Image: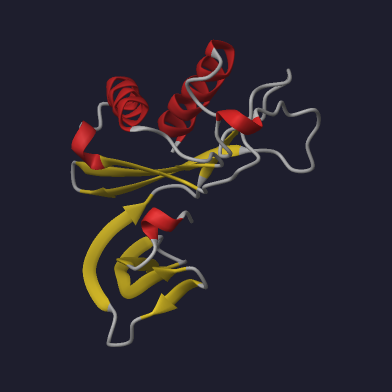
Length: 171
């Protein structure tokens, strides 16, 4: 987490579900503060958001590790690096929650981040492929400094967006 994010208040989310029926019962949001030491709990009771969403499947994952050397993001232009090999695969994941005819897709990728324009593109492509409204699609990233940067290589962009749409369609 970079200095501009220090002292920001946020919520850390955890879920409560029934593994037998695959029904998401609630989402718990605990207040936290981002600091140079990491994430600190602010105390107080977590917020419990009641839910009754059916989780049809487990988390669906698609590999987004490139086959060719790609520019890695996260360190700025002054430290341009290409990946040469990898220890673990990078993934884009998706889980779908449904209630009646409403579906919410929660997506996450092993990337340093995804800018607003790329996030909008992703949500639009996923919406068109799945029929889920754009406003029901969330996206986050792991903030890895050892992953390609979307927008720096058209070949990687194609790989990432294709894998993300596939994960969403299979969720």
